[in-house]
Structure formats: structure tokens, C-alpha cells
Image 1 (tube, rainbow, N blue to C red):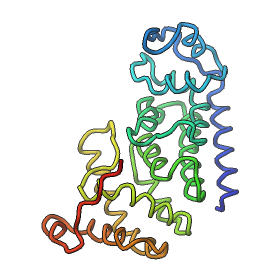
Image 2 (image 1 turned 180 degrees about the horizontal axis):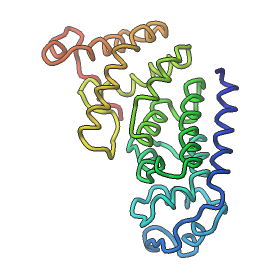
Image 3 (image 1 turned 135 degrees about the vertical axis):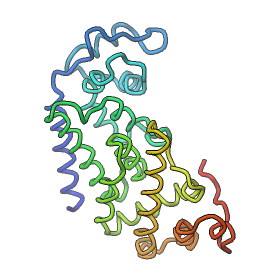
Image 4 (image 1 turned 90 degrees about the vertical axis):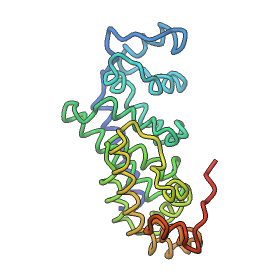
Length: 255
């Protein structure tokens, strides 16, 4: 699919979210602290269907973690939340992994089938479009984090990336490795996750193995720096073999 086709798919997915979640409201008994979250009037807006929220209220709503009925709150804001994610008006999204964790905490995969399918298609459409967009509103590595945390799995997103071997997808790969090099070489998952330690480690191992397999040829095709090429090679080494390699040096941690 080219960028126009992926944009059309994404627009269709956003429209499908609006249809699937039309009429959704927060739970009638939902409460929130008016000192720290917002006013009673704002809470009433969440209990009113299909009313557009201002950007500040939307951000405070999805970032709050102590809702009594989190799934209902997510369903209420989801169409607008998804549009904000795509536009990059919610940024940065990945350093805390919060946006994806919001999806996971809402347990969307247990929702009625039309709603769950609409969420799944949105995530796939957003990822596909990002890989085809040379200048996405949200960097590819951040979209990957949101999709991974939302679905609690890395596998489908890497599968799509593995199939997309064009110049733009390869450039995103080089940029991603440039950002994540430090953490990966330190054998750490390069983002925070709410999943348990074993799941996080499995994700790190899967990501590292995928980089070792897919990155070298694609980085060379992008004329990537020798530093990144050596970084991928070093990922394939462990322990003293990595530390005593002549090209080993701890890269600077990104700010």
C-alpha cells in the first residue's frame, strides 16, 4: 500500500471508531477529585454522549489512572483520543508508554466484537500509515510503543515492519535504532511498561532478535552510520564478547 492508500485506511479506521463508540458515556456513578482532576461540570461532560472535549480536559482524562470504571471512560473519549494520537497533539507518547497502557487498562479486547475490531483496525491502520509516512506526526518508535502496550504484544507490529522494506520504513528503522541503541545494548527494554517483568523481558528479547535479523541489510541500504551498523552487530554478542569488542563503547543515553 502506498501512503495515499494507508491514509485512506487510517481515515476509515477513525470513522469506524466514531461509529462504534457513538453514544458512549462515563459510568453514571463515576467520581473524580475536583481539587486535582477537574470540576463537577467537566465530569458531567464525560457522562454526556458525543460532546467534544477541549484538549486540556481530554489530556487530563486519559492521563488519570484512578477512574472507578476505566473502560467506560476510555470508550467515552476513544474517538477523540485516537484522533489526537494520530495528529501528534498528544506528545510525547512513548517515554512513559502511557497512551498504550491506557488501552490495555481498559481491556478493550474483551469489549463487544464490533468495538474490539474497531480498536484493532485503528492500531493497525495507524502503524501501517506511519511506516509509509516519511514525516509522521508521531515518530515510528513512539507509535510502535503505543501499539505494543495497547495490544500487550510486539509480534504483529514487527511482522508488518518486516514486510515493509521500502526506503521510508528503512529510514524509520535507522531512526528507531538511533534512539534505542543505548537501552538495547544495555539489555533493557527501551520504554516503560505496566506489564510484569517476565513479559517485558520477552518483549526486549523479541525486539533485539528482530533487530539483529532485519536491521543490518536495511541500515546499509539507508547508508546508515558505521556506529549504528556496529551497534546491531554488538546486539548479536553477549557478555565479554560484547564488552571487549574493539567497537564497544557505551553510547550516550538520549536526553
